[in-house]
Amino acid sequence: MTNFETLDGRRDASGGYNVDISRGERIGRVSSEWFSRPDDERYLSLSELYASVKGRAERSRTRTVESAAIRVEAHRDDPENLALILPEADAPVAPTHWSFGQLASLVSAPAAYLRQLPAPLAGINLQYGLTSHRAEQIKTLETEDGRTELRAVTGPDYGRIYDHELVAAVQKIAGNGTGDTRWKVPGTLDWSSGVYNPMVDITKDTTTLYASDRDVFLFLVDDMNPIEAGKLPDGSPDLYFRGFYCWNSEVGAKTLGIASFYLRAVCQNRNLWGVEDFQEISIRHSKYAANRFAHEAAPALTRFADSSPRPFVEGIRAARERIVARSDDDRTDFLRKRGFSKAETARIVETVLAEEGRPPESVFDFVQGITAVARSKPQQDARLEMEGKAKKLLERAA
Image (cartoon, rainbow, N blue to C red; front, side):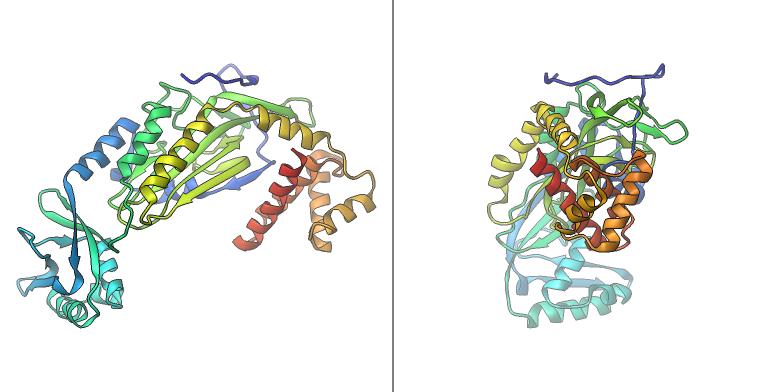
């Protein structure tokens, strides 16, 4: 188990602890994943997840072929399915929904329209596109699972990072992801009491370990070791814990990425509440993606897992102690000089007054007010812009 310094918080009789989720950002990325995943894409441990995606990779092969050499096969007695004959392939391959779209995009054909056609008619149109379109080298990913499926069609320089490689990197710091190390599937916030309970059974409904035929997504936290970073207005500790999520697609559906942060709670719907110090890196599957993953992304994950929370705690403390406004004029000047409109300035000050019982004075006060107002913005770009300004203020104070 990793050793580093934490400031343990106060727990109630159930092992949970009180949190204040009115502060910081709310991030819905994990919740979106949680809502969209059917049961067969949910896993109860990292070992179970790894076995699934590793086994899939072991049953797979890649090849580079000329697009014009692909033959489309469809039968009148099977109007809903078509197959592809690849050069030097032993048998036809069946395109998945995803790879069919990639192939159609390659020849500038409307995939949604082709999917509505009977297979023989769709096959005629796709074959015409492949033979009349300028021939290109493409890389295929084929997987054997009772039948051979074509899972991906990418450019020849596509730098594939397999899903199991990301899961293996997470296993190095998180073990099974079930509590055998600091890192585990998160607990749940009780809205009625404001208590976050880190001890929740891992079920299909609570897990945050996901994989589909086109991607993998993992979210883990260190919520058994809360960190105290200052006090709330009532004198109780302001508690955080560490978390990260990461994602990948070995078929070209998305980049590989890792996001790390401190947060105050995770609710039942897997929204992240009270997020601070959000950091994210992403890697496109370009020619040198595997090297970047090995030398940049995987080490960054390990560094975060092994790091001390002291810089974060001291940064929060510095922001709390740095007084930048003593009067209403000071508050207005501070915000207007940083690009906030007159209306936004008024809302930020009013928000802090309502939540803290006093107007903002420190950098931390202003950061909390800005992020609270940002959460109410309906446009994502406007919300991200305000959250970015808050993050810069916090970084400069630290």
